[in-house]
Image (tube, rainbow, N blue to C red; front, side, top):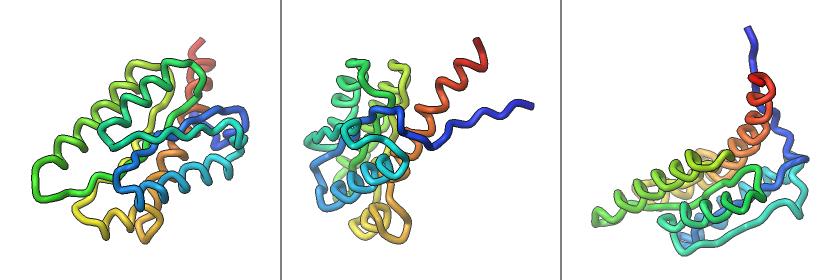
Length: 158
C-alpha cells in the first residue's frame, strides 16, 4: 500500500487569499486566520497576496483571474453569507460554491472554499475564530496540503 499525503510545509509556495468585503466584521477574522496559518506553515510573507472583492458572489471571478496568471500554487477563498429574510442567501451561497469549484476544475491548482454559510450572525462568529474554529484557517490548511500533494501525485504516477 502506498500512502501519499501533502505536507503542511508552505515554504516553497506562493498563495493568494480572496476575501469578501461584505460582512467585513466576519471576513476580516477569516482573512487573519488564513494569513496567520500561511505564515505558521512557512509561506513567506512576500508570497502571500490578499485580494478584496465586494461580496461572496465575486470570489470565483477574482480566483479565476488569479489562477489564470499561473503565479500561485493555491488560492483560498473566504467570505460570509448570512441567511436573511429572502432567498438571496441561497443564490449567493450556491453560486459562490459552484463558481469556486469551476475554477478548481479549470486550473491545475487548489482553490479552497472558506466561505461561511450560516443562519445568523452568532453562527458566523463561531466559525470565524469562535467556538467552532476559523474557516479561513481551514481553507488555508487545505490549500497548503493540496498544493504540496499535487506534485507528489504527479511524481508517483510518472
